[in-house]
Length: 545
Image 1: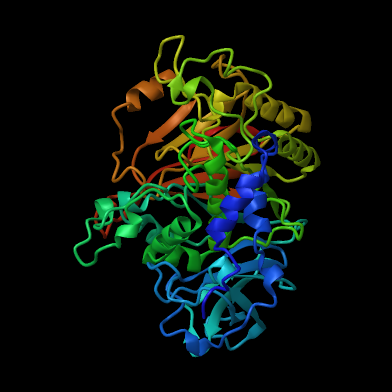
Image 2: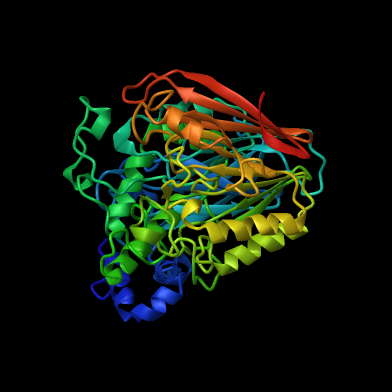
């Protein structure tokens, strides 16, 4: 089966759509790139696509595993993507048409008590991704699921729905992960995460990296395989991003973590390009080509994540969203990349200037700021938890009174941080917890109402999770450990190894266990708990567990 001659490829469509946008209008409508991604060939627009039979699939189509995500009290999204030859363009499937994929959800791992089953069409236009939003389920219940195509069956996944919003819970436990550069080492941390007992996992960004990967898989130093040369360049097109997700999702440790737990995901920068800001590329290039690149990256992200379908109008991919776990916790999952102003002072670590301190600057965008403030105002949860991308708390890199700060983090947007904290104050939130990634190290920080005054009120805590693999093995105390700990008295913990964090919430405290992996540049790393901290309800602040 071939693509009809009059239908351009998805990459061509994205470039043509980008060319039709007025650049000034694009820079003022920050959802435009997502609009390109989601108004070009939505699956619902191709219900007439020719459907082919499963006999056209000549190899195991479930090489990328299965996943579930965005659990609600009565619903959860099930995901897979068909790819018999995942590391090839087209993945070994016809370039047009669709195939029907069966799915089952059961109360038991052997599928003796199937509660829901059905089928969905996997379309070539969306790279044969399948998203099934299964509703009508029991709240706070474990289920098992699988997919079938013809005689082929997928691995079995385990998922869990969220508890009812008004339910009184004793405790709930989550995972926090981020930053998994394939070329920097193995995803060993995910193998250990799969063995944890968790209600869900929060991934706060950098699921893929855009940089080229050599034939040996970078620091993985493969000797048993050779990666195709098509991975050894930076991602730019829809095909590039699709293939990069295939490479990552072909990893057995990542597959194990997805199959073990439902995930809530949000992106940061590397899903598109390092340190981009809304519609502005990293190095100030002409934004016109970047519009198409970002649209392609957003589309590939949705195809490969267990996310719900965009709203029918298909005008943007809105990732910020709110989730409730009983009376215990409200989670406000943020997007600090898609709507932000450009980094001030040329980005990097710079001294604050009037540019960075401009009161009009935003990291979340006006609409998301309003949504966040209103959600806090309405919250009745014991804990207000904010999974987000970049470090919120002040980080000076010297003990001198005047210090450089990261222009990409909230330090580069102090007015936006003040509006965030003012919203917390107005809502009367007493138990604020931020969950952060991005920096490839682990921190535990007190969130001060005024970071210029170390003795000011502590209004919450920030648990920064380290990377899964980015920056290699790492070390317990990096070279700047003493400097950062001395310069930032609100920083109570700093560890530079790879790993993940687990968080246990109950009515009295939140406990963070920082899990560190011995090494990731070769297989077989072991996991230990580097440190554990708590913050008490009504008495915010980092304390040893």
